[in-house]
Amino acid sequence: MPALIRILFFFMIASPAMAHGDETHGSGYPWTFDPWIVVPLAMLALLYGAGVTRLARRARQPGGMLMRALLYCSGWLTLAAALLSPLHWLGEHLYTFHMIEHEMVMAVSAPLIVLARPVGILLWGLPGRARRVAASGMCSPLVRAPWDWCTGTLNATIIHGSAIWAWHLPVLFDAAVTNTALHRAQHLCFFVTAILFWWAMIWRSDYGASAWH
Image 1 (cartoon, rainbow, N blue to C red):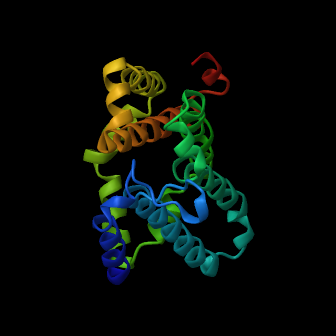
Image 2 (cartoon, rainbow, N blue to C red; image 1 turned 135 degrees about the vertical axis):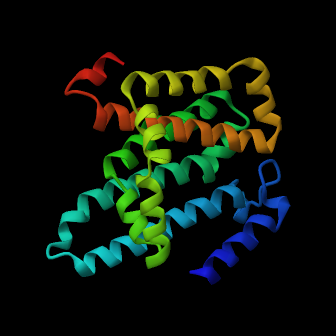
Image 3 (cartoon, rainbow, N blue to C red; image 1 turned 60 degrees about the horizontal axis):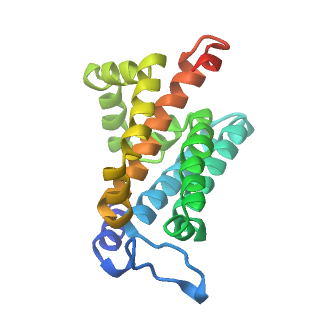
C-alpha cells in the first residue's frame, strides 16, 4: 500500500501538460487525463475492490454485497465518464454538454454511490491500522456532529443549492472555464454537496419527504 501511494502521488505531480486545457488525446479522441482526477478515481476503485475482496472472504453469503457493489460501480463509472471521457472535452466547448456533465456528476453518479453506502467497504480496503484509525476518527464527535448537521434534509438542500447557484454566477462560471484549479474545485464542490444532498434525501428523510425538496 505505501508503494502504491508513492506511485499515485508521482502521477499527481508529474506531467502538468496532462491537466485541463492541455489534455493528452490518444488515437485522436479527446479523452481527459488530468492526474488530479485520475488518481482519486483510481484510489476509490482500488480501495473499494480491496474492501469487497476482504469482506467476501469473511462473509458467509458474499452475494449479499452484489447489489451494493453494482450500485457503486455504476456511480463510479458514471463519474469517470463525466470527467474523463470526450463528454468532458465537449463540455468545455459546448454549453449543453457542459450542463450534461454536471448533471451526470450530481444527479446520476452521486445518488448511485449514496445508495451503495460504500464507506464501510472503502474502510476495509485500507490496511488494518489505517482502517482502525480512520473508523475511530469518523466516529468522533468532531466528525460526526458536522456530518449529521450537513446531512440534515434542510441543511443539505441549502448547501447543495447554494453551491449550484454560486458556481453559476457569471464571475465564478467564467473563471472556472479558464482556470484549471477552479474547474477542479467546481466539480469537487458539485460532487461533495450532491453526496450530502442525496444522503439526506435517501437515508435521513422520512418516507416520501424528499419529494418536497
